[in-house]
Amino acid sequence: MTTTSATVIATGSDCRDAFRAAYQNRYTWDPGFSGYSGRCIWLQGERSVEGTFHVGSDLKAKVEGVSDPEVEKAFASQLWEVCIHRVRRTFEQTHSENTFTAGDCTDEGLEVIIGGKGEGDKYRIKNDVVTMVHRHIHGTVVTIHTESTTDTGNGYLSRCYTSQYSDPASGEARGGMNRFTDTFVPVSEGGAWVLSERTIRTDACADSPASEQTFRFVDLTSA
Image (cartoon, helix red, strand yellow):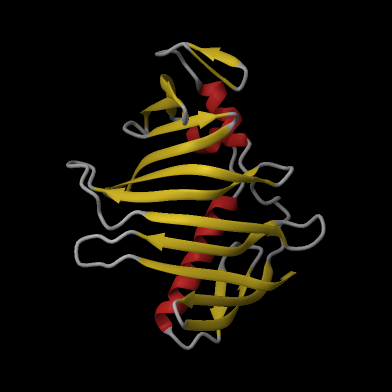
């Protein structure tokens, strides 16, 4: 047996309610989200590339004025990733076809084993936070460990976390582990919380050396 969210959950039992509590504790944007804009800055070593961006109420990002097409693509990718995780979908919309079975418990939290449509996926939850994600996505597996969070007062956002892609059959790593540090701020007083800075440190893997890059989103204004 283990205790999570003040509820004792026996190994092998249904833990849908405990997982739902953690899922619903994630920070998402209100349905009336209007969008925001600002300047974007990419830093790597001595290099610095700047531009402007706009995220619409449709959660689509547009990046302009960036001289390097690869950096422009990277800005767009980071903004897309932020937006996709801020979409508010009910637990039933996302997980109605899944089952949730309690596994073991570690310092990282209670293991949640998924059956049904998402069979093969696993999570860990602790204090109404999803601390680990292990999901099969488009022929690969991504494993994310969340080490610290930001409390918005209306749900949590991951602050420090790692992300590793691997082969679903062999478990072999695909690329180096990424270590993220995210800073979120309200775009205006009482407004939506948005990403203001993300640093990504990537471990060396095969022929790819270790690297570090930082994305900054500044002069933020609501649409």
